[in-house]
Image (cartoon, rainbow, N blue to C red; front, side, top):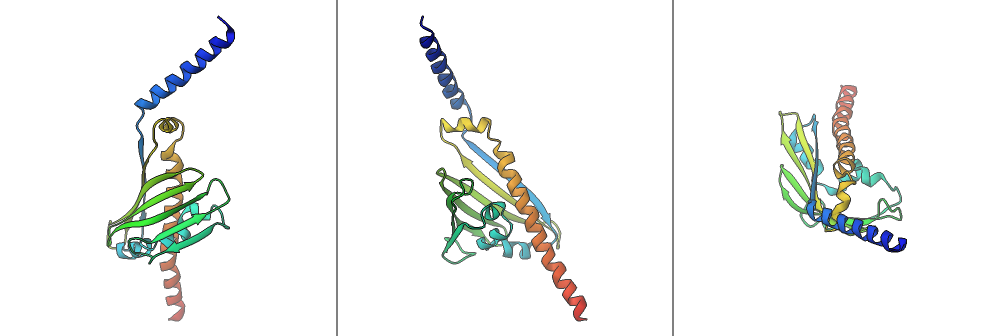
Length: 192
């Protein structure tokens, strides 16, 4: 047998093996991160329900200071859309829409990536009162990859990749909300 034919058969065998493996791998994945914020639940939720506020704490919003942002609708209401476009490949183009709000409890979004690849994900943020002054915030993400692209889930550690960005954002959210109360208490002390 010609060496070229052997190499071709091995190559085709590897491709066939990868396609079979992709059939056995799940298509869906989910990521969640949580944090406790030392603020009452209603204060935390009232901040989170405004999608524009994600620009203050989301890691992705800070990746390109020159990204073009557009908004459609009334923020903190179902149907509000925050869209972005960037020349940076790791930021790309897409939009996020508020799809449901359960007042004081949960906000659901549809995240639509357009460039560099098309994809849709369901994202949510929930608030849960731990005490009168402490609130647990959960930020979650659910999506899927179609066959045979789901093979990438073997080496793309979505839990780490997205999860680390969520953790960074939640830490920033905590700083913002807890700092606001510190600033107010310092102003009150000075005024007395």
